[in-house]
Length: 369
Image (cartoon, rainbow, N blue to C red; front, top):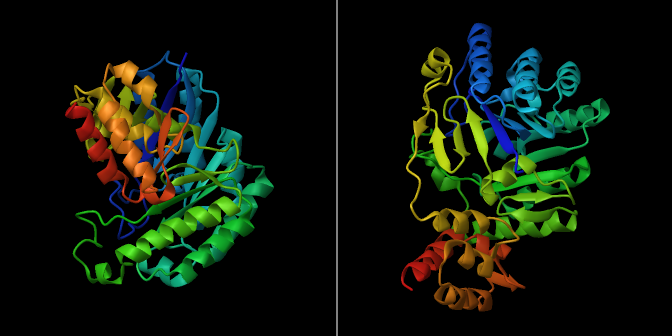
């Protein structure tokens, strides 16, 4: 029986980074308390399902008092018989030994630190409040507390980034001796301070952006981090089990404003409205339209993974004629953008850089059979 993944959105930040489009607000202790109470009530509505992952995202989950993290985990265990991976995102500058002890006591067994960069200029331009020293200290203290499943975020193609400054971040990652890295390209989102600002002129051009991504892929592999998804790299067996549910089409339930779910074939989400979520205790999520052609979602998500898609099984599952798509894929393989391993079609690191365009053309080939 496939178990469900649980996502808890923590919509609180002490300060908003200028590139961030995630839903977050400043909030005092009372607002945090009432929010956690609403989340726990919301979890109760799904009592009886079985879950094997829990992920605290944000926002900045690590600014919450540890007792709130413990309360949610306790409720999830009670409602869902939760056993397995429990991840929490943390800003390095909010980490203390006492918090780490409390998180571990509560059941958190995986931490994801928002490093983004080890270069001071890049940190400043990104609006990050932590220092490189705080990243090192947070990882060191986490290990001393007994955490052995640690991840850091690394942003690519950020303002003023060069191959040299990226190497600075990669060298730090190598020295940390951690288990996982999320390395993703900066995307300028509408409505953020970065959008329409002069910072855009400081972004790397297209050629350098490609070089930065491929350099990160190559160097992380040398360090023992195998790429398993377009933006994720892990030591053997340390892939993020929760996030894998998104890409393989597994069930997951998201709780909190702006949180999305895919459960029993339906997609739904909560509006970006903290006050409404607290008032209703999450009883009224909005329903998304689910594509009548589920094969589109399957293909797009599977091709995010380095293992790719089994073309024969995909065709049988959705009763599709994949001959035209396979012929087009062969052209991409010859161009070095994709590769075939047995029956599986997947992107190369170079191909991931143009994956949206390639996937669109593969979908067109399936439509025009």
